[in-house]
Image 1: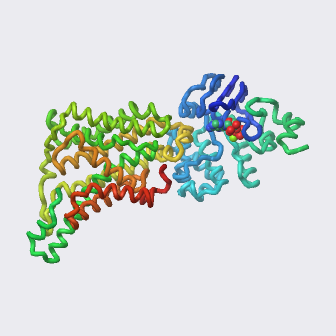
Image 2: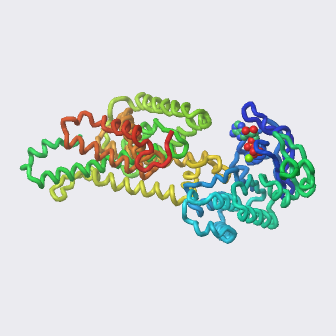
Length: 235
Length: 312
Ligand SMILES: Nc1ncnc2c1ncn2[C@@H]1O[C@H](COP(=O)(O)OP(=O)(O)O)[C@@H](O)[C@H]1O
Ligand SMILES: [Mg+2]
């Protein structure tokens, strides 16, 4: 579904992604593991069209999308829940969800999806008409996830959806990720919590200072000595 | 422009009743003038809210709206209503073209570049106006409907002074409806908070910015036309002073906030008229009042009355 080939991204003099190639097959969960500053967010931002690449290819559903503007890419069916939530704090919870469905016109289906989100995250229903600024960090994360789902994406990009959440909420987030995956959405997931991510992922890549250094199925990576040492906190 | 209070006092007997009617008359007049400042301020505040640009050409866009209306009546002999609406539409298009032609190319440049571009556009419009329309002021015919003078409870009130706040209120409601109840308005509010994330939602940001320019410019045209009827003549430099005062109103109300802009406009209009009425000896300084207020706000409350975020 998504194939990144030989991607290079520079921020001024910083070479943030070096010849990165990854493949996200349809209906699979693929995860990117790596330390802070490895370039994980940069990869997702390049796929969504937020940062330009200096070279490489990004093919999605058989089409080259590198160079398309971000809103065109979103309309192709790629949604992202960005790092740091980035909910629209000046809009109500309900309006945030409507923004997620900006490209859709099927009013009835949109209402149904919003209901589904409220069923999945009852906390959001309680705060339906409050500005998103009043939500706690965890609730904002739920909202960012819900907003991304509102576009009914074919490919969902999640940048650290469990960051800063209480353990109970983290489990909730992973439950939702599993659920939408089962319903047929392809997911590219970045997680600090490498253990949880590799557990749900079909396939994983390890990124180090802008380069892919390891790749394998989620299970293989979980058992890999180097991964254990560097990312799973084992010695 | 505004009738001197001395004249009123001499005409009357100096009773309390006359003092009151005089005061009311000035209040109504202040509200009318303030509505115009507010209407023009809306364009400043909407554009600033969405792309953080002080559109210094906004007053000149207002001036162009007046000329569109003038030529609509004079050259195409349109009925005044049709001419005014056509002028608003043309001014909206002009606003969008200015954005596309001048501001889009510097959208990602440092902010100072956009600011200098705006000043350039302002000079361009003014000088284009001087060349094309000529520097000599043109008389602006006020439709009879606005030219009448009503006598209400001893007050002599020109119809225009009553119509101005009413029309302003209708336009303000329409604009607030767009901002708070439509998809485009929702996108505007999102862009003003976080443009990048708004693009992730599939929003064509440039299109929404165009809509913002269109709405702000149309409001300026409406304000300009009512301004032209008030002082019934137009000239290519007429946009400068109302433009600056509307800018002060926008800052006073809290730049980025539409209701605030209207409130700022009303306060400024009232302050100006009342100060001139109560202290006619300083009437010559009326334009200085606005800038005094501006300096005062920038020092003591840069977020304005209704602003929340600190403008840079
Ligand atoms: N907007 C930016 N400007 C300059 N450098 C950046 C920018 N964003 C990220 N970087 C740099 O690019 C590298 C990768 O960052 P990022 O993709 O955010 O890493 P990760 O998400 O893996 O923590 C880091 O060295 C970071 O400092
Ligand atoms: Mg990151």
